[in-house]
Image 1: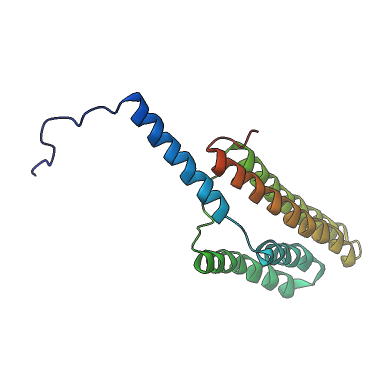
Image 2 (image 1 turned 45 degrees about the vertical axis):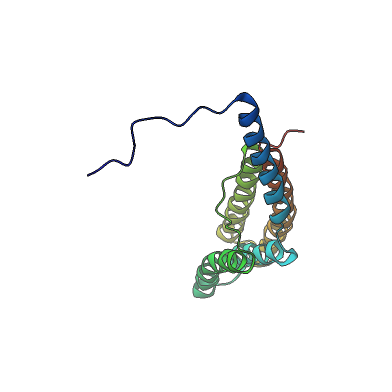
Length: 163
């Protein structure tokens, strides 16, 4: 296989050229940050899915499992819809601060599911499941918006979001 490398390296940029290139990259990050605006319906839709997933534990037998399965299918449908409408992938891994918020959001879902299952297992009234479901849904909206803000800050500064 033939190599396209001609044997000579391109000239090294001067320090001014390197600074200019970095400045252009930072400007690109700032432009990208203005484009990454999640529509109002995204976090509300995600919260509805989370509420359904956790709240379904109040239902008996097959209905509960069916709603959890539908909620699991609804998550990629929501993210794909967002990606196609806005041309922005939701699979971007953010910096350390936005990643912590994302982990907290996942923890809220896990705690909500564990709480709902515990309520179901101990035999309490199934309506108690609506409390962790509602709390997880509200936390999803709040943390989701906070995640967006932090991600935009990280993109704009091309750092970990620190001010």
